[in-house]
Every structure is written in structure tokens, then in C-alpha cells.
Image (cartoon, rainbow, N blue to C red):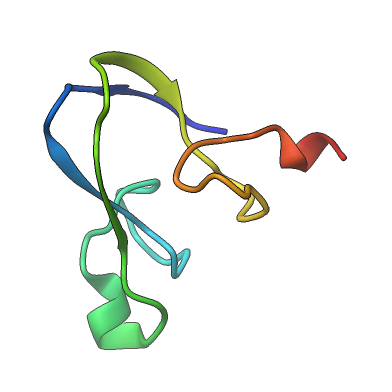
Amino acid sequence: MPVVELKEGRNYSYCTCGQSETMPFCDGTHKENGGGPPLRFKAEKSGESALCGCGKSQNKPYCDGSHNG
């Protein structure tokens, strides 16, 4: 679960292919190597946020603790 600093109102692209060099954010690698497109989202508030690193969260891109169960 990577904890990252987000800024309210800013748009982000969360990697869904798992191949990005800038995880948890998309760097466009999926275009060359195949894989799913990024999940685009707008930060609801500024500050640190835990983003999903396991792919199991039901609240992507945010971590919901699914990796614990």
C-alpha cells in the first residue's frame, strides 16, 4: 500500500497494468507492453493517501485493507 501525497482537485492516472516504472501512477508502459489502461481519478482532498498496491481493493485507487484478508 503506497502512501502518496495528493493535491485536491488534481487529476491522477493510477496504473492498472502493474508495469509502470512510476508505480502506483501510470507512465504509459501499457501502450508498449500491453495491459489495461490507467484508472483516472481526481483527488478529493489534499494530503497523504494510501493507494492500492495489491489490486484487491474494491475502492480503487484507494486501499481498503483487502490485502489483509
